[in-house]
Image (tube, rainbow, N blue to C red; front, side):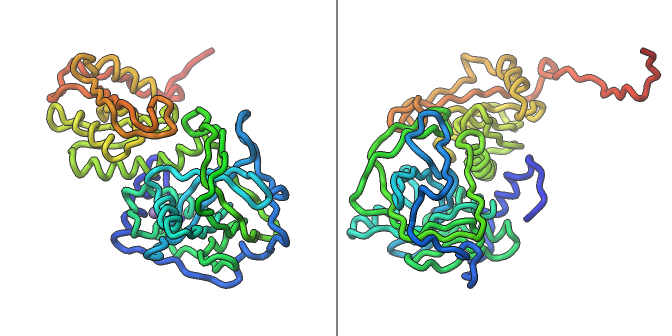
Length: 379
Ligand code: MN
């Protein structure tokens, strides 16, 4: 794994994603996988410590399992993360959002009357998790995103053959559930406290039947808090993808940050636009690149985009409300955002960049750095 600072992380991730088109590294299948040291005699999820997370969640949830499946027509592997509610000893409720490759695979399998086989991998190396949350814009449906894991690991991702399904699991996961998503079956799933900070409603959704569970000798079951920790997954990939894609269209972009309070619906673009109006083009590009965004704020490079106070100051001093607020009604957004109707809602953009060229009025006050140790101070 590479050493990286938090600020560099989206760019490391972007390089890993680029490797999918430049130099994709295929996973290898290994024998004697540590994830298969122990096989549960009878599948029984009540024996696995799965937590109930939020007060009104309907039951225990796996929140960060990496699901692997194969395209029913081409055999290309897909790796993704989905919430899974424990509904029985060998049964899970599953959410597959619109546009997810797993759902695409499933719908084609279901149309043939078939279940979709999957492995559900818990507690794998974070590189696999990062691969699984690669945005589909960066890893189209004909691409195996496990190449991202290989890049980050510095060696091919390691998979193991399953015993009951024709899909591999992650060889060094803590636990693997070999399973199938059943055709024509829907059962109630939810409520679940989601990344938006609100509960996802209870509705009839997809159903997983678990055929076998294997694990390491003393497995440590991994969970993810479905709030800020989801930002770390969705946010990281989205920041990198936004940066790369917008940069191709608009010059002057420096950084992209999906703020924690924004629940991955708010992106802050740090940009010094070469010409007036271009910050707005960047804002519009951001909505196209990452449709979940509800709000985009553009600030100059003299604003610390990670500092909410600094961003707010730019908003009240550099955004002229009659000119610099963009509202686009009825766009496709994110189903989990209660400000949308079934995912459709307005987008808002705030251009908080100063006019080009920069006038003295926009020079921020600065102070000399002082080290008190340089002075003799008597108390
Ligand atoms: Mn995919």
